[in-house]
Length: 222
Image (tube, rainbow, N blue to C red; front, side):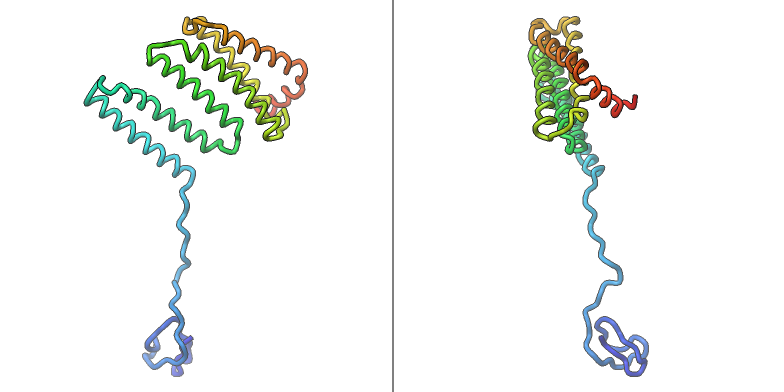
């Protein structure tokens, strides 16, 4: 550190003369240090990621809307992109926020897939394949995957994931709506899936009544 014999002070940094009297300094100079600590550049927050993704999807919607307006009917895929973009954004946000809950993530993804399948089925003018085959298969597959993840993969207690099974079993009965309104012409897959899940629900109520009640209390506070 430099020193001024006249002022009897130590001078930090590298100076050519004393800042008080202008006299000669003795000693060795030291590198100049910053007056304020250097702050780390903050990483992008969760909300920042959501906003960036939202901007990208809205920009895509704007481009697709312009194409639809300028050349209507010529690019049929534009309509599917405009419908798929907000669904994809919601799917991305849900996956981001629920990435630590595998069962919830898969459940939400499956329901989104079923909705998208039904919408595409209707837009293509070939109603039937989604409600006849896809939806029944998704309900059965979702229940089996939930059991596998909860019991064997994550080693969870039944009370921790039985509520997901209950919701899936209850919502599977909505397939009756597609049968009643005439969308489902081949009802065997839907009937089999609803019957199988109804039997599972009855078994859960009979053999695991206390666990079902405990799970309902935890989730719905009843």
